[in-house]
Length: 170
Image 1 (cartoon, one colour):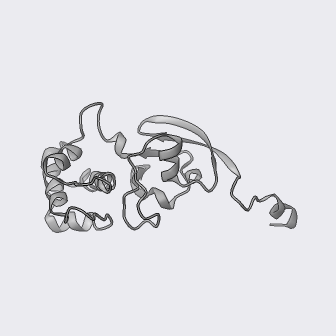
Image 2 (cartoon, one colour; image 1 turned 180 degrees about the vertical axis):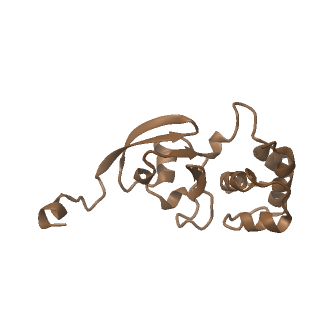
Image 3 (cartoon, one colour; image 1 turned 60 degrees about the vertical axis):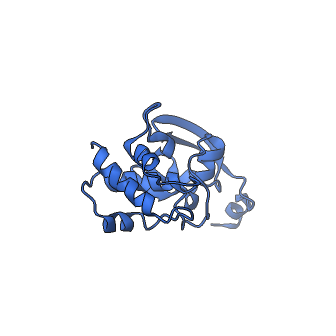
């Protein structure tokens, strides 16, 4: 990068880019700062507040969303990096007013208390169970090991995943 190019770079991050993303089946085009995180874009620009900002370091899993079908930490990604991608947030799991079987299982088996971590657990569980059936407790614990909960002690979460595994017809 030569001196003239460096002079055009805005050091405070006010540079913007127009991106197009599909979120939960709906297409959006927005102009965003190149430094705007994906989780903040979802929450602030699109009003999809189900993905939570916990640690902002990718450790807790509260901001987990699916990017082109794969779980990612939305706090670690810039919105501009998602340009052209398909995203699924926790809001995209339910079909209208009917809960997804994973959501229903968490509700029925007390897989949440305060609910802050729940969106990340739901999407991680979705990714884990969509191609796997008849899961064991150790497999569940391993699959969810990247998600943290401060309230439940994990027993209700594990029971919820087991119930979802049985109830979800994939």
